Structures are given as structure tokens and as C-alpha cells.
Image 1: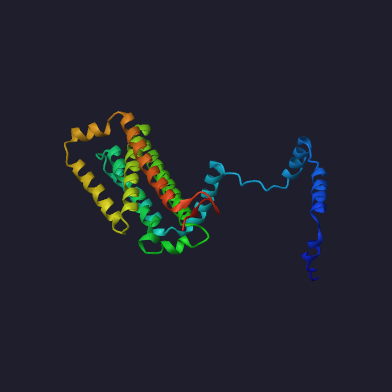
Image 2: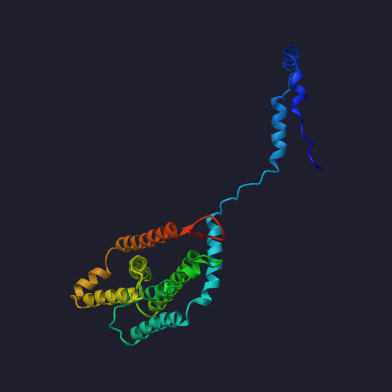
Length: 275
């Protein structure tokens, strides 16, 4: 329906007295405002229609979500990693069984960090092959994939090391608690350094460098007098705990730094990449 055009020329004949009367009439007209109680009742009535803000997920919810993602990512981790890590510990047990002169504490210290170091190849495989941008465009963000793989590989290595310690403590006269701390300290420390180097040096040769450095350090340790090795292996337990805390802190700082640079806690799923 076409709106009728208003002709304002008809108001030209209005006199000043008529305008004054009009203003007086308008001034006498009062608008009744609702009282405070009516306003509050209206607000409370409409409050139910206001959409609620999304509640922040609790840590346990995010952890549960991460575990579900980890179960999916297990199938994407290559079989050589699982097999190589398992064989490494089997070789350690065989060596321990046939050579009674090998120090079980030293053996656990040498083997413990290697599987996680190999696992970092799997974690950063897509980045080193130039596939990171493709993963970032997927529904599941690159950050979720990385943290899921870290969870899987870290948990797998802890399980292997724990089983290794249980078997050694059952066939040898060793202290299980000390043995656990001795492998856990280098495991966390080397893992933290490996994670730091992997994020700083974007190359597939990073793991080769890390493993070479670790083997070189062990070789140097083995060539030292046996009395010095004994002192290292029998240090106060609090020192091993301190090294473990340092290693865990290094890993946590690297992961948090990665999240701040690449991931936001808002958006889809657990994390979302900032483009």
C-alpha cells in the first residue's frame, strides 16, 4: 500500500495564538511512568527469554574431551613407534637377565627417555612435512591433535617404564621407589628439553640430534669412575624429585606457550586455532 504524501502547506494559516494554545495543551498533558515495582516485575518476566552465556567447561570436562580425542588419534600413530618402543624395553630386560653385572638403576635411567623422544617424531610429523596448514583447516584443530598425541605417547611411555620397573624389581634386589624416581627424573627432564627443541627447531633432524646428545651423555657417564656413577645413582631422593618437577615444568611451559600462540580456549571443541 502506497503511503499518502502529507501536504504541509495547509498549516501555513495557523496563527501564533493557535500555536500557543497547542503548546499549552501539550504542556498540560502528562505521561504516567510505571513505578519501580512494575519495572522490576517486567525485567524479571523477560529475564527468562534472555539467552544464557555459555558456561566455561570445567577442567575435568576438558580432560575427558581430550581423552576421547586421544582414543581417535591412536589409530593415526604409526605402528613402528609402538613396536620400536616396546622392543627397546624388551632388549633392556633381556640384557638385564643375561648380564647380572649391569646396574638396573643405570639401565632404567638410560632407556626411560628414549621412547618419548622417538614419539616426538610422530607428534611433529605433519609440521616437518609441511602439512600443518592442512591440519589447521580441519574440523579438529591442530592443537587438539598435538595435545592428544602428547597424551597418548606420554601415557604409553609411563606405562612401559612402570612395567619395566616392576619386572626388574621382581627379578633383582632393587628398591622399586628409587628405581621409579631414577627413570622418571631423566624421562621428564629429557622430555622437556626435547619438546623445547622440537618447537624451536622445525626440522625432522631434531630427534636425531637429541638422541645423539643423550647417547653421548650416557657414554660419558659410563666412562667415568664407578664411584661417581654410584654417587649419582644413590643421590638423595629429593634431588630426583626436584629434577622431575623441573622437567614437568619445562614441558608445561612449552605446551602453554604453544597454546597461547596457536590456540584459543573459545570456539569449537576443546580448542580452536587463531587464524
